[in-house]
Every structure is written in structure tokens, then in C-alpha cells.
Length: 119
Image 1 (cartoon, helix red, strand yellow):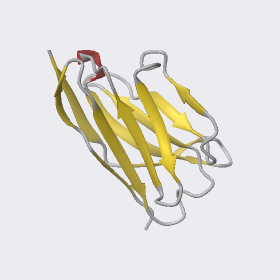
Image 2 (tube, rainbow, N blue to C red):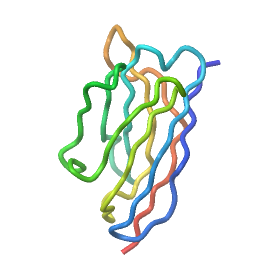
Image 3 (cartoon, one colour):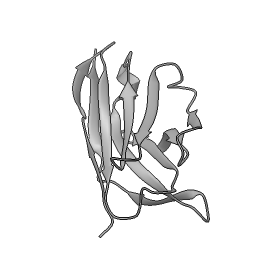
């Protein structure tokens, strides 16, 4: 069974940092774009960052540029999201996603990890 399992969320103060990890099982990781999304309470899920299969290209939402960094270790089937200079508006459930290579959209999701930034 293909799975994505996130970890690393928690409670942090404004200006703090966290590192999220997402481990993929099965064949889901190889050759796929991986991404992090987030969903705040009462809001729609939004794309935070994505990285292509080779790790040569990454894209970020404007709201996190310069603060968050996505990376991947293909040998470990793991994608990371480093969150720095956190703000209260970064509070959300963060989801790892694997893209379908044919339609270039997520087709597999993790269960999510909560990030809460306190002021």
C-alpha cells in the first residue's frame, strides 16, 4: 500500500523554526514531483512548495518565499520542508503530496501534521 507519512509538526513561537519530513513508501516517490500543501482552519488547502523528481527545481508560494525551503533525499524516499521565521499566519495542517506524472497534480496525500505558531 502506498503511503505518505508526515512528521515534525508542533507548537513554536513567532520567529521560530521547524523541519517537516515526509517518508514515502512503495513506488510513489520515484520519478514524481513532491509537494507540501497547507490548510488553515476555515480556509482552502493551498500549495506551499513543490520540487521536481530530480530535485533540480523548486517552486514556492509568495507568502513563504525566503522563509521555507523544500528538499528531498531520493535515496531515503523522503521530502522535507524547513520552516524558518515562522509567523502566526503559518499556522495550519501541513500535508505532503505526490504528483501524478501524467496529469501533474497530486493524487496521493499524507495524513497531515499540525503546525501552530504562537504570538
